[in-house]
Amino acid sequence: MDVLSTIEKFGPLQVNPEAFTEALEALQPRLYSISSSLRANPGLVSLTVDTVRYEIDNRIRLGVASTYLGDRITPGEIIKVYTQPAHSFGLPTDPNIPIIMVGPGTGLAPFRAFLQEREATKAAGKNWLFFGHQRSAYDFFYKDEIEELLSSGIITELSLAWSREGDEKHYVQDILRKEKVKVWNWLSEGAHFYVCGDAKRMAPDVERALFEIIKEEGVLNDQKASDYFSDMKLSGRYQTDVY
Ligand SMILES: Cc1cc2nc3c(=O)[nH]c(=O)nc-3n(C[C@H](O)[C@H](O)[C@H](O)COP(=O)(O)OP(=O)(O)OC[C@H]3O[C@@H](n4cnc5c(N)ncnc54)[C@H](O)[C@@H]3O)c2cc1C
Ligand SMILES: NC(=O)c1ccc[n+]([C@@H]2O[C@H](COP(=O)([O-])OP(=O)(O)OC[C@H]3O[C@@H](n4cnc5c(N)ncnc54)[C@H](OP(=O)(O)O)[C@@H]3O)[C@@H](O)[C@H]2O)c1
Image (tube, rainbow, N blue to C red; front, side, top):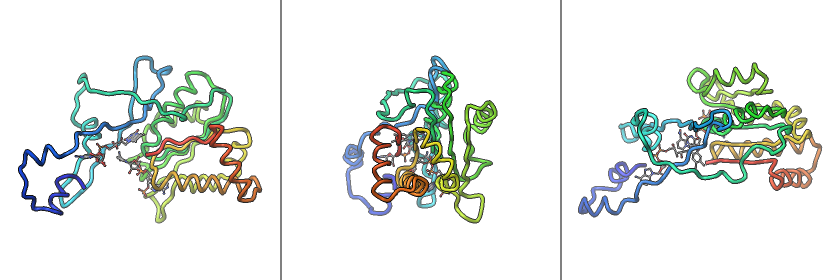
């Protein structure tokens, strides 16, 4: 609920309007992943912002920052930004190490940067991208770029999950499970595994699927699989940037 719908639900309010607005919190900054590589695009930084719009009490509510960026600013306008390093979320220092990236929705953003960086640095390591969203016709972010990277071999494997195209929900972790043999082979080759996007539902589900793969394909008991996974996390081979 936004401020207006809160008042509508719990009101009417008997307050001085000035005192009320003073009691509201100041607008907070929003975080966005950088979705480009400076090495591939010197002097340019891009963001991948999905606009938030939803219906609330029979009116359309617009996300403050995302629709500002998407609809209201004009080219050339100067806006206030700052950078915040994503600690423990980055490409392996060894360019030969394979990487598996799971980034449905806006979770794709940092992986676009990763792929640009791997291409710009001519990194030899294999790259496997898992992307998903509601419908391929509307939500396939950077479709042309991704297909180009696939045909040029920068993306070694591309796995796509469209959740609202069939009778049943189809999510990235479903393909992960289907591809368990290949996923385990990549992990055995030392692949780093990355997850970006929704923290509440997607990330725990992907973590669960990966744990099952480690257990089944590695033929490990719970304790050994748990040790393997912990080791991946401690050594930076399993990294997440979720929100
Ligand atoms: C690490 C990280 C990376 C992210 N990366 C991306 C990305 O690459 N792409 C992307 O699209 N999104 C990304 N997000 C989400 C993004 O930061 C914003 O949450 C999203 O764009 C919605 O912001 P909004 O202002 O449009 O929506 P709003 O709904 O207006 O605001 C979002 C939240 O701000 C608070 N808020 C809004 N108005 C008020 C108010 N009046 N008083 C108090 N609180 C208020 C509420 O908690 C609300 O849920 C990321 C988030 C994190 C944490
Ligand atoms: N810009 C925004 O839209 C925005 C703004 C603020 C915050 N957020 C938050 O940011 C996170 C990412 O949002 P997003 O808009 O990028 O995409 P999203 O909501 O994460 O949706 C992307 C895809 O993930 C699917 N999904 C839903 N549940 C899943 C699960 N358990 N496992 C795997 N996939 C699942 C969705 O399917 P279905 O929806 O068909 O189930 C959809 O196809 C979410 O937590 C969201 O609440 C987003």
